[in-house]
Length: 456
Image 1: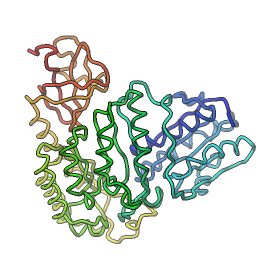
Image 2: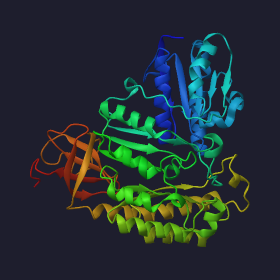
Image 3: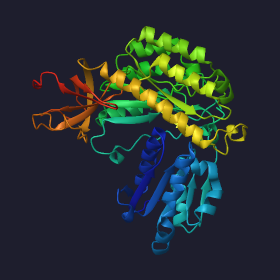
Image 4: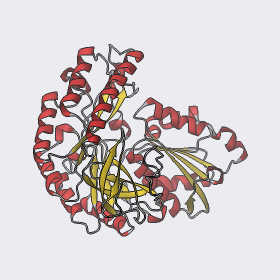
């Protein structure tokens, strides 16, 4: 049925949730609800939730909590909890948010429209957390995109088969399922026609794409996407170290549109902790794969995820992680203090680490990484890098915000995923231009376009 009104979507969590929210916006628009940024104007509000950490889960309930009074004055408002917390909580979500209308799990998007119909017809509450063997494959509605969006996410698979002991993904996203390569290529082609220059392929473990279905491998999928006319950059996340093949390393080396950057979560540098995490590789195997990667792609930028304070992690285990950072010298890391997730096996592990100790270890780790991030950035000073222009810069760092020329300051991203600020009188969002790096800062670079003007 077609309705008339506005929809507000609040997205919490990962890149995949950003992608999913666009799918939800497309569904809502097909039912007559136009997307709005004004929550007070909305006839339907969707909170697309994340349960990977406790803080994200509480953020979702906090957002939904503000509607307790609003629903009494606007009873027509439809309130929806979608995503991972919805999948995890099911009907229990109503205990904390009794005025909620729809609980929409991660595999229920194809049925969202009929649930809206049910609420509109007088049904009090709807819960849909049923498993689905298929991924929701509908093509995106370009009209739901933000303006000047030159970089987009594309989910190529959902779910996970790895069952890391700290992770809830297999329980809230289901078992691994890969999309068909034809649909992926069709979606990216549509995005390119809408002006998108860069795509990031998403999956809990993109390295195992197609394996369960007996389809094409992830490197072969990359080759197909690389052939799409108009796409200029290809990124992907996340790669599981145990499935990083020599074929994929060769693809990163040989495919000209695949960016020279890899995010490869290690989680810990201790073999004891890696085993307890059920990661499926050792410290030595991880290091050997990094050596293989650097041999074929000497200038590749590397980033990783690390969890500190995992149950039973000793100071010696933590020091193994610190030593791994020193040996590899990552360009950047995402580091977190371990927190229990009730449905993950590690929540029941003994020898939990004191919270203050976790924080101390995390700070020590981040301080070391700050040194390597700055070191990597400083190595780029004097070099020229290709930058995809993303828009105006919001930086006001003394020394380059006015850059002695009063030109508008822009920002973009290098192939190695580094933010670059630069002044320029005539660039467009989506351009790829050469920037000579003049200064390096802790989390960004500054330079000027070659041939644009001479910086004194």
